[in-house]
Image 1 (tube, rainbow, N blue to C red):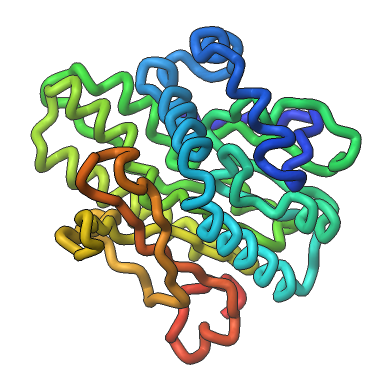
Image 2 (cartoon, rainbow, N blue to C red; image 1 turned 45 degrees about the horizontal axis):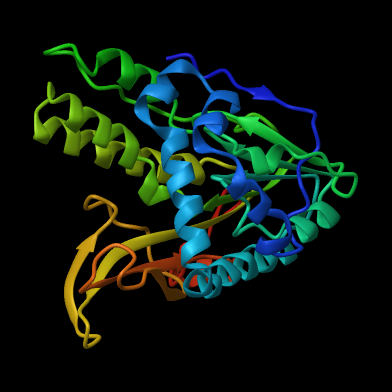
Amino acid sequence: MDTRFFLTKTRVSKAETGLKEWIYPLFTIPESIESLITPRAWPLRGMGYLRELMAIRGRARRCWNAWKPHLEKSKATIRNAIEHCQQRRKALILGSGMLFDVPVAELSTAFREVLLMDIVHPLANWLPSSRYKNLRRVTADVTGTAEHVFRVAKLPGATLPRTEPSLFLDDPEVDLVVSLNLLSQLPVIPTTFLERVGVHAPEAIEAFARHLVASHLAYLQRFACTVTLITDVEKLTLDRAGKLVGKSSLLHGVPLPCEGETWTWHLAPRPEADPDYSYYRRVVETANPKRLGSGSGILLDGRR
């Protein structure tokens, strides 16, 4: 699997002035046009990565007030992690997305270079800005499997890929890594694509999903720096009366090393996704290296 990536030198947009000021104008771009002009590899077009990103952006627009506590909590977790970095040369944000949950200003001030890594970058992140000159977009598939999945999806008997991610592991200047609301999402698009094609057995697809989650956790543990993980771990369904009527794991049975602080993300208030039910996510964060010694947290630090 070719896991090459490119590092752009174009500055990214100001992301700390509020959704209305700099994101809303982008909603006026027709999705058909945005789909044509957003750079991405052909397999990613076919699998729907940009389409999913647009859907997330649309839901954020409709549910901004419900999302805001989760986004602010995610930012606060990253700010806390910054304080625990002994050196501040490079910060690597895995799953930067629309930057809704990224404290761009603080990262830019604290680090010599901030690497925003995602498989597709939305147009909002390509707007030029003179304020944050040390932010760089890295376009990469952190799993290194998406193009392989696209190639073998229609081949009966083909083995789904295995992966051992290694991007930036050899860079000694990376002092902070943040896996940002990404872990549970890694299997979503490839497994949905495989299920839609219908060639591979459900058991093989589920095993592949578990592998992606487990390999990402192993990848984080291999970094020789402070690593902060923020991820949703459970889907919660509440009825009109606010009663919990459903709960399911989002990590395909893969356990986290242990859990730190948690909070609830109101992902889809009724009737966003359903007229009768509201959907929440239970989110786990890690940002306190002192927890490591006691085993009560899940901040991963390669120096332990």
